[in-house]
Image 1 (spheres, rainbow, N blue to C red):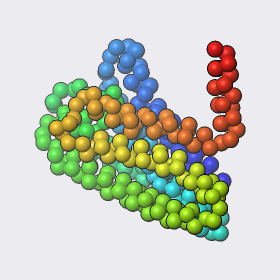
Image 2 (image 1 turned 45 degrees about the vertical axis):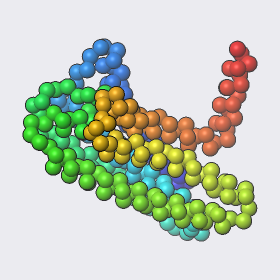
Image 3 (image 1 turned 90 degrees about the vertical axis):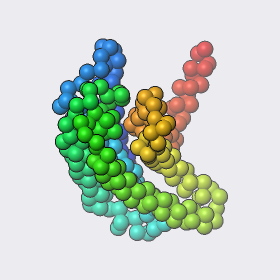
Image 4 (image 1 turned 135 degrees about the horizontal axis):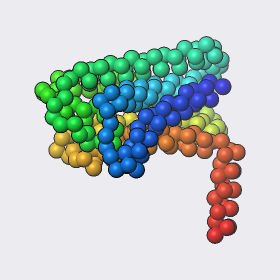
Length: 256
């Protein structure tokens, strides 16, 4: 089914995103060091932007999948055939690659001279731009405008799709049918909302409320929490998995 096909790609992007930042951060924490090479920082930044961009694109495609399945069920096989799904997945990964390449090249083309300490647990674009030798306001603004346009396009598409989905669901005569349709949409909507809200607030927050602890918390929220929660949120719709979790939970309580 297309949904499981896209879930596979989403799982790969989640795994890649976590493996890009968390292992190095854990290594630095255990070894009581914060060192990373210039090349290592560039590679980390590229793969982080690559997997995060791919995740957002895949979440948008999964929204389209839900829109077609609920609003145009008779055309589902035509609009979401195996070839169409493969093309959409390839477009998501290709656009993520180009976006990551552009951001990495743009960021590391600046000479850095204001120290070599990043106030973050991974190489993040805003933190790197703070080390630039000259005023990088225009460079930062250009990156921000491009990212916002890309994210806004996906966000508008997602909002429009869900408006159509909810209108279609409310026309379903049976309450059970409405509940089933809503249950397929709410997990995806929760993941998208968490991902977009934390990422936007991290980029658009005013400097007056910026602090190292707040920057760190927001970075964890949009870079670690959504990829870690995605498998749990989507898997809990699986009845067998829910039954297994319930048995494990009740067994632990009975054991104590």
